[in-house]
Length: 486
Ligand code: BES
Ligand code: MN
Ligand code: ZN
Image (tube, rainbow, N blue to C red):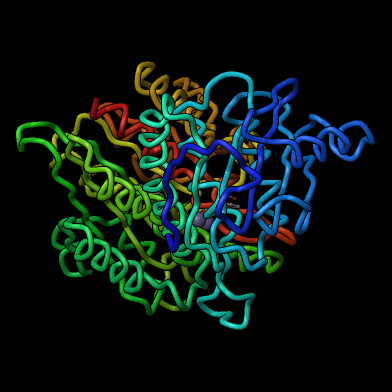
């Protein structure tokens, strides 16, 4: 993050020393600090119908008389909830994006006190709104000039707000890292690039990073992961990250991220339309890196392991073929009926590998199925877990972080479809309920610890004009981990 963020008490917003003033207003409240000049502008705008208390409505004023800040934005919030606060902020920030503001002051006039959850959203919302992808497009609009963000806050509320701000800063950094990684094209984000990124993160933030190479993976016997990787010229990497924030004896949480840096489908090749979006198929891996970034900053009292199987899924003379049978690290054999169902193949070996850490819980994060997008669209990630308590914990974390998920079923009946005449299981079931069959496949490898699976195929990136990664579910995962460390 290129800006510093702080809280300050302000008695008169018109005199505030900043070059952009963003005022979130709720219905029926009027901050004392608004003063006469700004107060009358607000009244008139409301009276004349130029501002209304509806989500997304805002009003931009340039150099209004009697106000020190050269830019003022009023953003109407439809309610006092953190969600409404975030929506108002986003709408207002869109008006400031690309502008020259260096010091943004955010004042909040909502009924009820400003609480930590509101403050927590500030940094992620600002970073999200101002992000510009430049890695392979340096000509894109210049990076934001913003250097300071101040949250106006009465003295009595500052302690809670500061705590929220600090968590938010870490989440913002994590989301930004995940987003940037996932946005990079397949030729700029290979498995080796992912490993380099993990090592960089480790060096900068005191996280232990080890990278297993093909020969290590062969020795271990990860036959499913190897099968997916064998069609590509890019070397596979199995990345292991370890953060230690609690005594050794404390069982770690393990995050497993799908790291397919490009998914062509393999021999079961995908149609050409929108295939470019399969560069985002390492969104799970990116979210693991992003979550480690946040954790490294917040230093919660827990142990955390990150596992990232990374490779490309390519067709070619050496590629795995439909009908090939391979032996997973667990010893179970798999008939690869569709080479495009590769995510579960790299994950199942990582899930077996996770056993050696005797984990308190394992959560895998994967852009796993198009079927999940059909089921839930792009708003909620799919949550699968046979463990009610763990599912409830993740669901709550998603709600708190405004990074929502929705629990999906795992009835034994859905396992039927995985039957194979030639192996312990096939890697695909019927088309209907495809997100669930994929989860049932993974479930066969997770008997030894509490487990949950997040299918982020719909939530990890946006298509269309706003095509790009979202950095989700870093907020959910960070919130979950903070909950575990208390
Ligand atoms: N990476 C895809 C899942 C995906 C597809 C994510 C579209 C986002 C948008 C995954 O590897 C895949 O190809 N899954 C197949 C599974 C099928 C062959 C059982 C799918 O969803 O079509
Ligand atoms: Mn695929
Ligand atoms: Zn895939």
